[in-house]
Length: 356
Ligand SMILES: CC(C)(COP(=O)(O)OP(=O)(O)OC[C@H]1O[C@@H](n2cnc3c(N)ncnc32)[C@H](O)[C@@H]1OP(=O)(O)O)[C@@H](O)C(=O)NCCC(=O)NCCSC(=O)C[C@](C)(O)C(=O)O
Ligand SMILES: [Mg+2]
Image 1 (tube, rainbow, N blue to C red):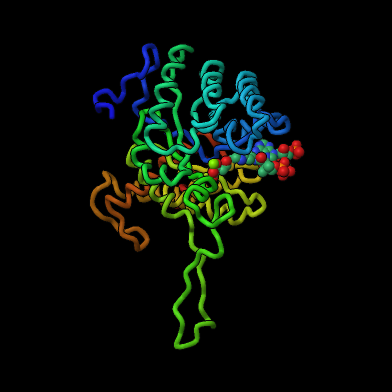
Image 2: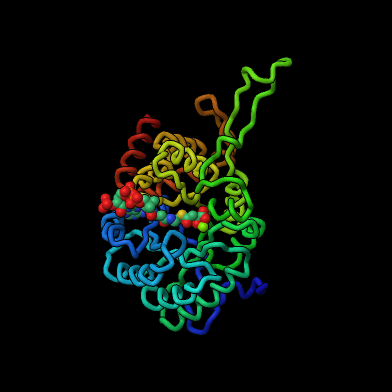
C-alpha cells in the first residue's frame, strides 16, 4: 500500500500528474463497437453525434483471429474521426491474455492523446489496477502525454466483488466501475445463461391462505443484480468515482432493458453500456432525469434558501437531506443540458410550469 502522501505522485518520471477529481462528464451510454467490423466502424462518425461515450472493444465479442485487426482499426478510427465532445474509450483484453501488452503499448503510444478512459476487464483486486497504473505511467511518459489516461474496472469476478472497495480506491486514475453480469455469473457459478437482466425462476411468492398451497399466490420476480449494483454504487460513491450498469444482452426485449437500466439509474448509476443502436435512445431516456423531477428539484432548492430548516411543499416535508437529493438531480440535469439542447429546453419549460 502506498502512503496517502504519495497517492497523487506520478508513477514514472515524466508522466503527467494524476487528476485529483474525476470529471463528471455526461456518460449516459457507453456505446460498444468492434473496430474490426467494417459495418460498425463506418457508423462511428454518425454515432459520435448521438452518444456520450464511444468504446472501441478489443476483448470478448471480438474473435481471437480479429484481435490485431480490432486494435489497428481503433488506432485508425481514433486518428481519422472528429469526436467533438464525445469521449473515446477502449476495453483492452484481460490482463492474463496474450494481447493486452500490445493493446496498451500500441494504444497509448499511437492514440493516447485521443483516448479518455481504458476499461480493464475481469479485475480481481487492487493488484490489477496497480499493474495497469504503473504501466500506463511509463507509457505516458514515453509518449510525452500531458493528460493522464483514466481507468475503468469491470466488476465481473467473485473476487472483484469481494474487493470492490479497494479496487475503487486503488489509483487516482480510477474513473468508474461497470457491472459485468455474464462473466460474474460464470465466476460465481450462478445457474443462468443470460447477459444481464432478471430470471423468472428468481422470485418470491406470497404466503398461502389456509391449507391451499396452489391458488392465489402471486409471485414477484426479483432482481439478480441488486446486491452487486448497490455494493458497486457505494464503493464508487465512497471513492468519488462513477458507477455504471453493464450490458443487457436481450437486444429484442427493449422493455426489460429499459426496466433494468432504470433500476440502476435510481440506485445511483450514471450510465450503462449500449451494445446495439436500438439501446441508445433507451439509455438517453433513462439516464437523463425526467423533466418533472428536475422541475420539482429546482422548486425545492429555491424554497429551501440556504438549505437548512424545514418547509412544506405540496404536503411534503422538505429539509436539509431532501434538498441534497434535489441538488443531485438538478446538478445532473444542468450537466446534461450543456450537451443536449433538447433536454435543456424540456427542463426549462417544466421548471417554468412548476414555478408558475
Ligand atoms: C449483438 C450484435 C452481434 C447484433 O448485430 P447484428 O448485425 O446481428 O444486428 P442487426 O440488428 O442486424 O444490426 C443492424 C445494423 O446495426 C449495426 N450494428 C449492430 N450493432 C452495432 C453496434 N454496437 N454499433 C454500431 N452498429 C451496430 C449492424 O452492423 C447493422 O448494420 P447495417 O444496417 O449497416 O447492416 C451486435 O450488435 C454486436 O456485436 N454488438 C456489440 C456486442 C459487444 O460488444 N459485446 C461485448 C460487450 S458485453 C460483454 O462483454 C459482457 C461482459 C460485460 O463482459 C460480461 O458481462 O461479462
Ligand atoms: Mg465479461
